[in-house]
Image (cartoon, rainbow, N blue to C red; front, side, top):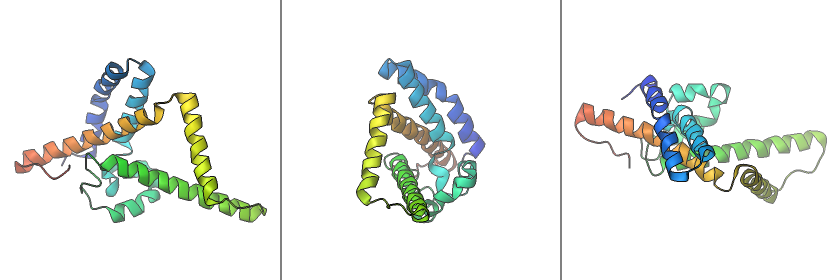
Length: 177
């Protein structure tokens, strides 16, 4: 399979076509920039190889431990980690779940130390709703969709590279779909 360096080089080389494609589809430089930034993040930090010790995993530095349950749960190169349909979606849902859990525990600890009232589950839902409203009002109604599209495209580039490597080595495509 291609090395981490190869994946990184392909991500950087295809960032310009990702920007051009984003502009052609949206006719907006800012939307194309959002897609491209998310594409680079998706390819360099949020890609399919987070299911193993990899360059992407190492880049998370002190935060790499948040990916330990993900690594234990998903087999490397499975359709749930490297898959075109579910891979990026599962990582986004997993990441948001971990961030939510960490934030919830942190708030509980702070309220226990300060003697305040702890949050309820509905407070969590209202907070995410406010985050969504803030994002839409400050970055546009399509911001989250553009970010997800960029993350998905960055991960898809990685998967396509792995598929090409598998085909070159074995003459058949691995089951990534």
